[in-house]
Image (tube, rainbow, N blue to C red):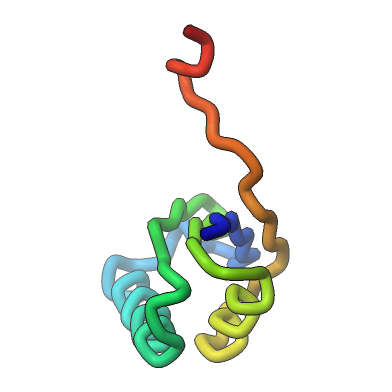
Length: 90
């Protein structure tokens, strides 16, 4: 199943409180539950003005549908083509 990185432009995302992040997570999980197991949220990275989310999904359209239903921006969706890490150098 393809993996995607979603860039969400959210000004001041790094200042969101734990309660706000929990609410966003709950909204996302609720949408995912309704959409079914074909789309999965792996994890997200919160930076100053963006949230980068990693999803496993059948296609980009499913990722966009999740964003629309959850009321989240999906400013850029990129399919992961390869994964590298320090062991790749060996």
